[in-house]
Length: 526
Image 1 (tube, helix red, strand yellow):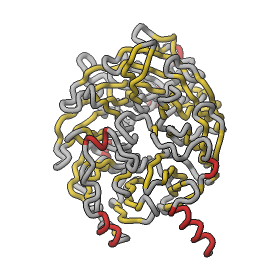
Image 2 (cartoon, helix red, strand yellow):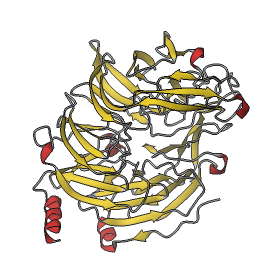
Image 3 (tube, rainbow, N blue to C red):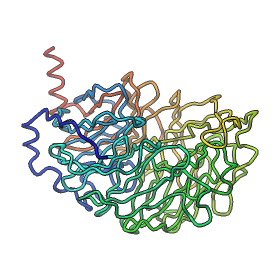
Image 4 (tube, helix red, strand yellow):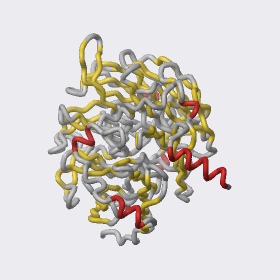
């Protein structure tokens, strides 16, 4: 049954009218090579590198950044979404909410609110855009298209049944005439999938199921999709990470590797055909899904030009893979790992059966939250550093046979963890520098050609670091929960760094910008 939507609250008719032909220019070329005044996709571009070519704000002047404007959502949850930016308009989400705001001033243009629903409102990553339509996955796993100028719902289709335990948090991936979506959730007997929808109607074009390969059907469920994939236009392949198998902490009912859960998969975006798969966590029994962003880069590797895919995985391993064929180039750890016997000839970890949960408990590194998680990493092509918000950690895992064969059938109890930004050399997997964050942080990472790394810590501080060394060059305290990833864009000749903390979005510029001057004037008048 389709949603009955509340009316869109248009808060600035003048602003809506001023949009005119806004968003008409968003096509495959813009999504592949975004101009400096745009951030049209979840990752910025298709690669997942979260790297900005802007240099106006750099290591020499970042300490002078000043607030340009703030936007208050009025929501109690923290913002987890990455805003997208097209034609001077920022679009971002929280569960059951979408805002369109002016990227120069932070003024609201329109606000869409979905009706109450019983889905799991764990968070929302953002919307996507093609031509003049926004694409959104609601908490209860509806895919929707909205008019980018007004927020009016154009179509609404059910992707998964939230009453059975599947919901959605992801921002769709737009490739050609495909809107690629998936569903989340950890409940038993639910198969994860990646689905392509028609951008004009929402009709299903194809559906790839993660847990239905030959020889394992009926034995394994899970493999849900939580995060947005990446895409190589030259190879015409898209790359996704899949979730953990179920039952979650009990592997006995599902012997074998449990393909294609906890996997990185390469799919043809036109047909959904699987081209190759690599499994970071075979037969996972610790809830270490592999949905972390598969980052793409064209690099020099041992004297050869290679098209690589990099992933810092939740299980504590860092992988560099040839994305043309799925073959391993580098497999190493980026923190304490004690659950494997090493790696096999494919570069995939070998699980140690002695480290599976037991009634008397097993001390495991990392913990269930993982060495990293949903937090977006960044790859800086100048330094060759893959920078990730990590959490070295230990936990005691228990199995609980009395809980039955399904569900969690166990528990884990954290013993120790910390937060740290780690800069990993893609050539070797060696950590070049670490920046302590105190407790486990929720912020992702963005790097820039200005030599800067932007992120946040667990105490609500925005951070600007020297990418080459990890040294703090700038910080600003907010006191809020930082759970999103910074972006950067340039409007009217001025670079903006956009971050969020709690339910508030913050825009930062160098002094002298029109927006920064207006903010200073308002403060002086109070």
